[in-house]
Length: 238
Length: 400
Image (spheres, each protein chain N blue to C red):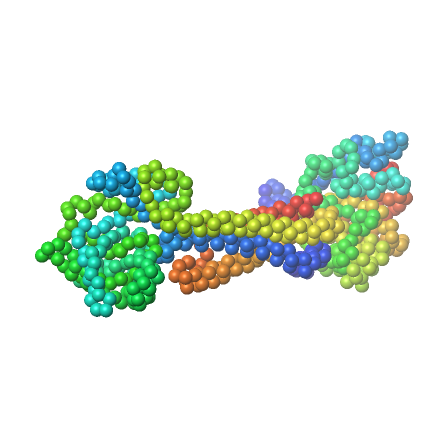
C-alpha cells in the first residue's frame, strides 16, 4: 500500500482518502445534579439533569431552557468551570472533576470551544487583541482569516477599540470570533446571539456553522426560545 | 503578530497593576538582606583567613602557644625532668586542638655578644631556634649556612619595648626604633677555649609570638653539633604548638593534666577571637533574619501582583492558557530581578573585600583581595533558595 497525500493506492486501485484525524470527543453526563438546583430538579423532570446523557460526534444539539432551569449552569458544567454538582461529567475518559487544570487547559485550547453568555472579554485589551490572545495559543487560523471574519460580522472598524468600550453587540461578535480561532470538536454556546439583531444574528450563525462544518465538529447551543439558527439534529428540554 | 506581542498582551493583563515604587522597595529589601548575609559570611571568612590562613605572616599569634614542663620543688634538681621526650612530643601531636608541634632548640654552647662604640657592652647570650613555619614574620634574609660570617637574629618585640620604655629612660640612653636596632651590628663569639668562631650578627626582625632571641635553625644545629654537649640538641625543654583553639577547655585540661606551663599572654588573642566569633554569629543570625524578611517582602509583592491579576488569570485559563504556561510567564518576569539582586549583592561583597584587603595592608596583615569560596557558596545557596521560593510561590498563587 502506497500513500500519496490524500490518495491511497490499494492493489493498483486508486481510492480517495478522507483523512479523519479527529477522534471525536464524547461528552457525557451521568446523574449530574447541580447543588443550587437540587430541589427544583427533584420536583420536575429534565432530559439532562439527574439522567445519563451523552453527546456524540457531529451532533447539533439545541438545549431549550426556560429561565432558571440551569442553562448557563449546564454550559459551565460541560466546560468544566464549576464543580458544585453531584454525579459525573466526562470528556472522553477524562472525568472533569478529577482532571488537573493543565489537562483541562489543553482540552480547552484544542478540543472544546465556548461562547459565554456574558462574553468574558478582557476589558484592557482591544477587540483585535482579545481575539489574538486566543489565536496565538494554537495558531491554526491566519490573521487574514480573522480580519475577513471581522469584516463579515461588521466589526472591522472596532479592531483597536478596548474591550471595555465596546457595546454588548460588538463584544458578542468579538467573543464569537474568539471561539472560532482554535481547533475544536465541540462548540458550546450560551445564548450566543442575545445582543444581535436579526441581520447580524444570521451573519454570525452562518459563520459559526461554516467553521463548525470545517472542523467536522459538534455543537451544543443553549437558549431560552426555539430558534432556527442551525440545522439541529436533536432538541432537548432542560 | 509576533511572539513579542503575545508577551505584550500578557504583560498588559498580568503586570499592569505592578507598582514600580513598591517593586523597587521589595527588591531593595531583598538586596539588603542578601548583601548582609554575604557580608557576614565575608567577615567570618576573613577572620578565619587571619587566624588560620596559610599566607599569614601576621602577629595574630592566638593559635601559637609555647609550653614547657613546670618547674616545681620536686623536680627542681632532677636532671632532665623538664625535658620533652619523643614520646611526649608524639602524644602532644594527638592532643585536642593541637595541629602542629615544633621543637624550640636552645644553644648548648657558649655564645658571647659584644658591641663597641658609645653603647659598648658584652654579655653571654641565650639563643633559640624554631622551625621556620612557626615564625610569625619571615624576614627576607632569614638564612644561615656553615661558612657564612653574618648571622641574622629575630628578637622578641617585648625586648625592644622593655629597652625603650624601662631601661633607656632610667639609664639616660636614647630610645631606639625598629629600623635603628636593625642597623646595629654585634660581634658574636661562639665556642669554648681556643676553638671559637666570631660572627657579625644583626637583628633582621621582631617577633610577637616567641619571647626569645632566635637564630636560624641551621645555625643552632651547627653550633650544637660543633661546640655543644653530644646528644643535647635532641632534648628540647620548650615546645611551640600550633593550636586550633587554645582557649578550648579540653586543651587547657590537657596542659593541666600533664603539668605543662604556658604563657597565658598567648591566649589573649583567643579571647578576642571568641568575641569576634560571637559578633560574627550575631551578625550572621541578624543577616539571616533580614534576608528572610527581604525574601518575604519580595514574595508578598509577587503574590500581590498575582492577586491583582487574578481576574485575568482566571479568564486566561478559561480560554485555554495552562497554569504551567502562566507560571512560566510570571517566573520569567521575576527571576531575572532576583538574580540581578543576588549579583548586585555579590558585587558589593567583592568591592567590600577589595576595600578591606587594601585597608588591612596598612596594619601589616594580609587578606586576599577577592572573596573566597564560602562567600560564593553562601551566594549560590541563597540563589537556589530564592529561586525555589519564587517559583513555588508563583505556581502556588496561580493554581489558587
